[in-house]
Image (cartoon, rainbow, N blue to C red; front, side, top):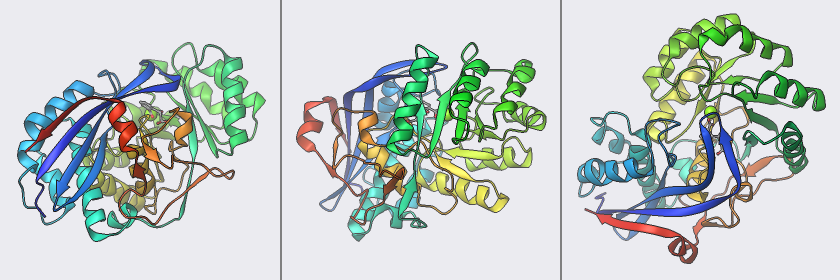
Length: 369
Ligand code: OSB
Ligand code: MG
């Protein structure tokens, strides 16, 4: 299969509600989509970086530049034996895994469509026909508002609640949420807001029987997480720290975490995501699928990923309507009253693209190769 051309498109999508983490507030997404073409068929990918280089080093403009100047020249015009060959073609680029992963995922979708099979089948998934859904709730203006939001999501059926924490919005907030909801599956994500000097403070979270604490310490420090994990009963889940299978191997060996959040973009696409999944499964660590406030395309890819066997915990993959007044796919992603997403059998990522709407929110476009 020859990749004839790669089309980049940046879209602007306002969120229905701002999303706040320890590194800032997002009101509107600027998302880069990738469409790859071969023999009359096209496949889609989403680059999951933020608008600013705060979650990791990537952002909308860096992703655009990396794909235009470094990824597309390596991939466009290439005759590929299969989608597994894409990631190695860009392995010489340091970092920028979300940019590289957006193209990689698009080729997986393309090959699934060419074969007439669903994306989940193409990546070797299919362990479940319904995936379990949780929600990630950002930092709010008040604990009352947070509790109200949690109530709404539980009423919608979501199986697990993740709240964001940061210094000044942590122990006391978790305590109040736990008092109000004594038996829900609850977890907290710090997005690297603490250091080992906060170990005694974080230890207080052990009182609230959380499922896990996600990425409390530095984005690039597996060793400190190992030191902290030895002091906590609550399992640590690593997000930012795990960018490759090599990192997963090191974190497992050092006992730095008990759970891994796998994000397709953060690790550079399906090939690496699967490697991490397999390593964790072999070591007996459960994994779940994280989110990056994706549009319908990235969301659909996350659904496919979540059908691999070791995605046994509810992920941050939830209904389109929690993010968008109107999504770019039809139908939008919907969640059942039991808090699941039903996985379809349509070829590729399984949803139609609303091209007219997509065009109306596109702010720039470029065709490469
Ligand atoms: O750490 O998981 C995270 C969003 C942006 C950046 C980082 C994270 C998140 C989320 C949102 O938690 C997950 C989602 O609902 O898409
Ligand atoms: Mg996280």
